[in-house]
Length: 561
Image (cartoon, rainbow, N blue to C red; front, side):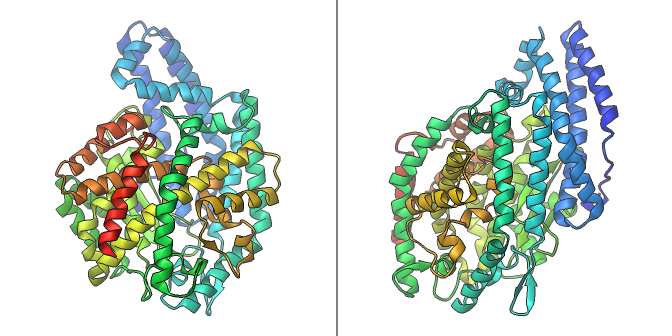
């Protein structure tokens, strides 16, 4: 069965609530562990069935946000997901207090019980209306971004598809495309600013209802930060400023010299590493998928089996088109044991990067699909990103299939981009910590904050000619800031881990991919630090980790200069 044939039916939430009541009764009255476990597995299956339908609806809505039926279904889940959390929270309380809790913990592991503990701390019935409001705001943001139609050189572009022109080999085209792109954000700045202000205030209110002064503790609970905290992240930010920013700035300086346009790097030149343009993948979307299938067959039997499954079941939606939501993601449809990859190809090297990135997520969940309960299928977010970012590097030996004579350019740009990304990712996180520490801020305060932090982490920035960026507006394009609070430091932590895998590949370590498969197979059964140790990598918070990682990258660049 192909994805378009997957059956969708809106869950009957009233019936689900009645079934939850029955299950809660069974859990409380169970006379032995077998009866208790049977009731537990019933609720987990019900959760999986609901997730199957919500995933299908979410995918079909993001593929075409103009589809009225799935827009209504999206609204349904925005209203009912918090109600499901209430039902699950009631179940979790019973599990924690049950005499059979220790047996359940022995079977499903400490990590899952920590997730249960966090879920209980992060939820209270009095938050439901706020959660629904937050969901509505996130949906409105996604729809606004998806609705963008930008006229450029006689054609209409979405924000995603205009990226191709923003990376054009013709400098004048790049400049005009950037001004058109940021012109849309300037036109919508007031709406985006108001939207985010409401998000900050509703999230702050949720934190305060749970007894916290700010949203930060609740945000960390929601993100399942089990084995590191705000202080660890603050120390990590300092180390990024010390160890990574200087290396990234060296790369920017070399880029300025290589391009030869002047003494600075205007924003429209930032993504261009070479005077004759960046590498571009060769072939249509279907040809790139065929090359990816060949690549994954050669990488490992398991990756070959996985990607064949994705192709056979039409589980990839890759082309940018009107009405399609922006960005890229991987999700999972439990009832069909199906990962799904969503992307917006734009005929730049990003196409190869996003395909291998999301394939890393998809491969992990494909390997973990039989792990129970359903919340253990995925690891926590920063661990998930190790799988995706590392897959980008594990596929390097096959990039000649995609880029042919431009493969060396691709590798240089990809690795340089990975190093340059870390300061940006930490900036996004630092900005959010400041914003939620000052919920009373105006839109102008937030713009000023971004620009001040930007000068620390990305001091090379030259926004001449684009006023909204000079005023601090870059963050308006980052959907995670709006829709997934505190989900961004995760990418940088994972990037440090992925770069360690890259180094092991460069050294010809035959165990590297075996360690990668190992961490893909354990799903969400381990917290971040333990998963990193299982992969035989250094934890990014450990002293010296960033220094060593950057030294490896510097050596590679020096060899290529």
